[in-house]
Figure 1: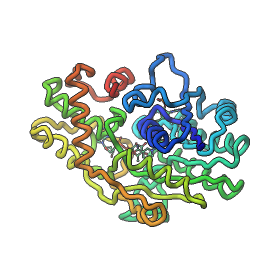
Figure 2 (figure 1 turned 90 degrees about the vertical axis):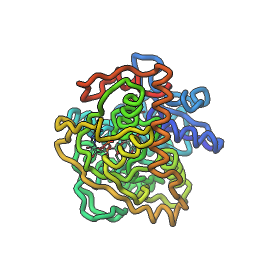
Figure 3 (figure 1 turned 30 degrees about the vertical axis):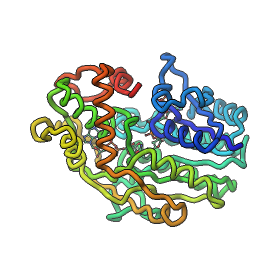
Length: 347
Ligand code: NDP
Ligand code: GDR
């Protein structure tokens, strides 16, 4: 029987990937870092109804010895390294921590695999943020990188370390260069979820406005459920490689907002406030991915449109908030703190 180890299992992708692998008959081990709040992290797995089916084990990607123990004790046939400080905005405020977990964390996992389970197949969660300042209008596996945030720089280091371990030690190590992907399980601080949560609050009379930063930025948004399937497909190939995963369609933040407001019959212009404080020190203006290699080699296709996904997210937020599982957000909210984040995660 195949067994998988997922770092970052408590995140959006970790939860969907665990669900997908369980449906394929895998034994799923999830590495969870210690927290003072007992139920932290279990929320997304519980939301998907799989919390009892995942074997959780303590560890942290910044601690190599913990990873060696985790890999030794779980003996996985596949390792998915999804753990990261994944919020771009935070990476300017915590650049060294982002380097440690998002960058060096990958090297630690690679080392643990090399030392303890060298035949395991390894997946690294690389990112379209590595493209940063765009060198080509549509980004493929051969587009040069130019990261624009500490997060992007850390991901690029991890990406090259994955390639280096493949070439140096013959590890079956693949990198998925995934473009933005979202879902009702997306963290509340990311723009799509901030929008769907905000629209639901306005619809329910819990808030009057939605404050955003750069609404002209363009992203290629897909659904997380589709994207975790691509991760798995990469590890089923005989030869490890790197793949772009994207929809090929890019829209502005403003256009994405319009879909959400339209869905509940509200007008964006009456509620959207552009707040200069929410602009980033350096922006990635536009991303659009060419996933033709993933289509050709992996047989992968996205199945959920942006419109379907945004409506699903708005409906999930309306449902959660109508049950009283949210909190009223005042006019002055500019950032999401940890307490708000936990309160807003579907439970
Ligand atoms: P999330 O932010 O939802 O999840 C991140 C996960 O990493 C959480 O489980 C978190 O645990 C864990 N983590 C953070 N630091 C550590 C640490 N030091 N040791 C162990 N675990 C840690 O991210 P997503 O699920 O959205 O993304 C998954 C991966 O894919 C990330 O690496 C992200 O950078 C990358 N990616 C995501 C894209 C997207 O659009 N979603 C696109 C491209 C790449 P905890 O719950 O304790 O905080
Ligand atoms: P991103 O996602 O930085 O692309 O990284 P995010 O949703 O945070 O931002 C997307 C774009 O929206 C603009 N924006 C805002 N963003 C946030 N979060 N909040 C706002 O109020 C707001 N207003 C405008 C941003 O400036 C940006 O242009 C995500 C993460 O999941 C990474 O981990 C992953 O690697 C990349 O996607 C691919």
